[in-house]
Length: 250
Length: 349
Ligand SMILES: Nc1ncnc2c1ncn2[C@@H]1O[C@H](COP(=O)(O)OP(=O)(O)OP(=O)(O)O)[C@@H](O)[C@H]1O
Ligand SMILES: [Mg+2]
Image 1 (tube, rainbow over the protein chains, first blue to last red):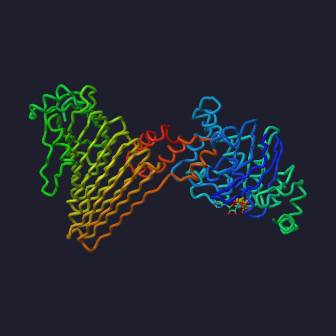
Image 2: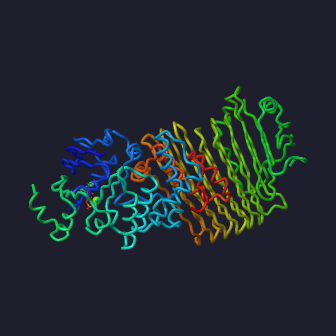
Image 3: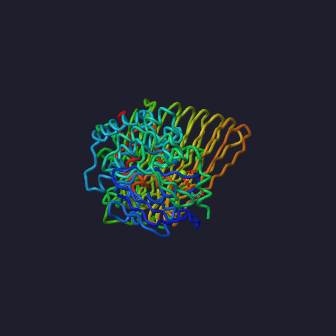
């Protein structure tokens, strides 16, 4: 589904990603862990097409297409979804108008008619249940004044609305209380299928109890330095990152 | 108002044939309200403390030979009133039309709303006097959204004792505009709220010049002007608040925010205060910013294409002004003009 080879990227002339290789197949769940500042969010931003980052070399092929040459909106409409580590507030744009534009943006991309108002509302009502998101959030402006946890919940709600095929979740667990974590993680699992793939970026084993990964990658200093199965998270929980840093210092 | 006319609908139409006769014989100028001609009525009420500065005097002189003038006495009834101004003869694109409106409440109306829609393919100078009369509440909004070539508006607001007036201007047309608004608070406990919502694209220019004159004590004025410039567009706001020596306990505020969404666009802002009284609360603020790249990217990540996302963000920026429109339906209409989308699905979801 997504094949990344030797991906290098920089921001403001500083190289952050220094050769990422990753192969993600439909139905799989990959976890990416790694110390602060190692480049996890940068990787997700580059895949989503954030213009602040420059790809200096490497390739990423998404469902047979050259991902890196596509506009951000086209990547999204091809099915790439990023749950942001820090979701942006957009005062003055209502959740409803925003989601309607997003849902219909995707339909237009596929050559489909826009949803009627009533079908759209029905879809919204149905998806709201999955993440148990409150109406007084969805009736507000996008993320405006939402608490940290509410923003994360809202990301997963949007994911449910858009039904992407690759779901990149950047620290979706941070800021969620214990119950919200369970609800959100269960939402992600419920929406999982053999046709989609999930990339979870996290610092904690806790989330991986709910979203069980097939692979865990450790990203350090712009490279994936180690790949293991779910047991690797437990080891990290116990030992921290010092032994990795020691082993892979340049 | 003409007898037998449908209530609450004013239609002011510039007919070229009639208009030409107007230039030669100005005293027979005709205004068509509701499809029936009305007598010309007095336009310049004699308020001793109004500065009657004409806008762009030079321009007027230059085009005076082909200028066409129409006068209308617009008496507002209670509730909603609609007025359309159209100057769009295709065969005579250069002649300047001058419309003068005298807008005032009828004796029986305590709260009147007026929506003025301007569709002027010919250059139009619109001179308006709004009298906010004693104890009356008046909401006026002028919308220019169709294709217009050049629109100059001069609005003189005179606020008498205990009057409440809101006056909002909407310029979303790809054309050149200049709006001059002068509000004179001449009676105590009057309040005036001025709003402007404008955009300038493709070499267009929108200038706003406001003067709010506090002449007596205990009045309140507010101004909120927000504009967006794109693709060589040029926007400006110049606002002066004058508080005369005896206008104690004045509260006056002025806010101007501009958004530039393209490097070729320009925005200017010039707030000025002239305060001669000591017991007043006056504030002003002006900012110029840009479309937030992280908001834009967030929207694109959700599959909204860039131009659509920009439209939504523009509407969001300008909505602060529209949100203050007392007429809710006009707010929705204006916001959907900006986004090209229907507004909020208002149902609880
Ligand atoms: N816009 C930017 N300008 C300058 N430096 C940046 C920018 N974005 C990221 N960086 C730097 O790139 C490095 C990687 O950042 P990134 O956000 O990808 O880390 P991360 O692995 O997601 O960390 P965390 O676990 O704290 O979220 C950091 O050193 C960061 O300071
Ligand atoms: Mg991060």
